[in-house]
Length: 230
Image (cartoon, rainbow, N blue to C red):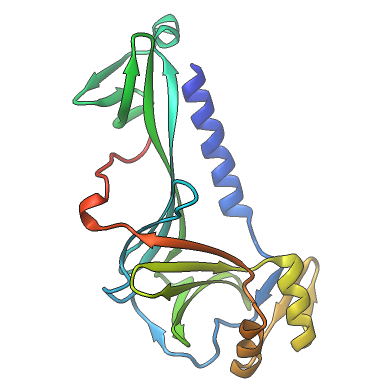
């Protein structure tokens, strides 16, 4: 296997492992906030593609899902593929091989290398039986059930008309903040909270959901059309 394919395989294995195994130490016994209106989809005004100005991370908000994407350029050696007898073709600025039958965009090329656009995706929320979407105080709470009476919570918060914030828990900070507000129930390495709306409001006012990423809306005319998958 050439270096490009090995690199991409390692990236996907790493992404799959972290996405599947990442559970915050602070979780909730019930979907949050308690008694808040439950939504079946995100409003049309919120839907679209957003980009983190600091890097190439993309946040895609659809009617029923929130998907995070990372795009980056990967060089692959033409000589190495030929040496390994890996069949491939480049057609209409798209790279095709047995490992990427759907194709990858070719950003640029040199006589001995192709520079490909690779997109990694991670679904943060999808509306189904294991997820609950609730709106409260202008924020959208994305609840994912990990086990009975165990919920992971992320938040989306619009900032004006062109920006959106993704909020999630910082275990080392948010756990201490929550313990100052209410008594937590411990199960092995997990701490479970069951805050009232008043207690959750206090947690938020004290900077709860400390990890925050801000994304800027990408105009529809600037959203690149890309082929998916490797």
